[in-house]
Image (cartoon, rainbow, N blue to C red; front, side, top):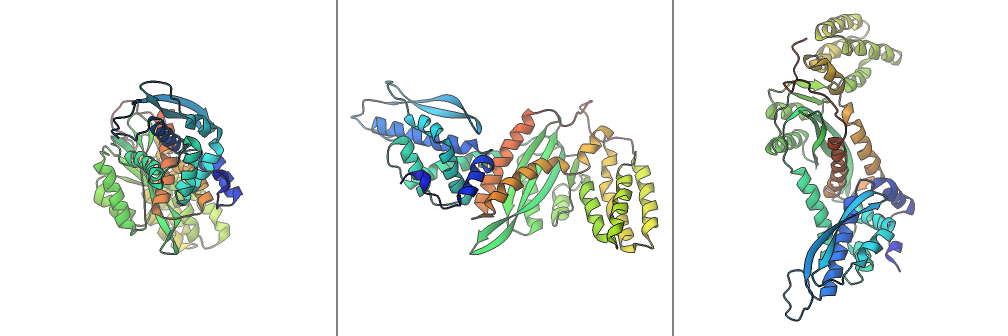
Length: 395
């Protein structure tokens, strides 16, 4: 039996993981093939890494980088070298020929959290020698180290901080539970977006949010002038505790959606949405507040609960008027995170239920790392013309 035959997941799901769900995880191929090449060199030398053997006649001589184009994009491998020459690892060529099979097996191991036995079989096929489960576990640990390093990397000045939360399903003690996935992104002074961090936990909402926000500050996050988010449970108290003096912009898109629940009749929803858009699209805050007062009066008798809700909640979506008009479209909602959330949803939807919190954090971190790299290397998202503070004196 070959390693390609040893799958427990339905073929169509594995195919989805191979062609879509794993598209942003070239590190998996890189880590596994690098490990196989190292093991192949150990076999060639007759000695493990750092092992002293007086009878050896060949010696390791570091690594030579090699970038290869794959269906998942360019992948950089570290090809082991031997001082005396005459060695070239066949694991690299085998790995590239078996790229699809590797991706499928890695999807099982890293995403579904199955036994390392199947991946050990892949490594044996690549390097031509038997490997232990501990060696394969080390390959998994290397990936985790990369992702952990990114999650703890140093942050800097972030002008606009965007926060969002979503939920994923995991198994815990034989039950399926919902875990909160907290994501932070930001726009720096240079005008580029960054994914700043992610946290996965089943803990109480306020504690989870506060711990997450405190971790961003410990990593050097500074200079925040505005926080943009929806009204997530537990976030308000955590935000005030960690960023007490920073203004908050409640997502206008979600406010408009929330208002629909207070319309007494379904046929009123379109009219309510148009009235709220008029408020949010006002030329300045003074005019927006005038529109809000008129709208509250409009619904006082026909939809009293809606009128009360609007008076209490809509002002939280008007903070954006204190910032430059050129920035307002980008910072009045959390829609800037929509593509990010879409990618997470598409990939975690294939997995459906994670075996544990660590598996969810691993996959989501890898996706976010790739997207953050794209953002930072892409076009400017905003322009800070004067290089100064973002607040506008115009209300």
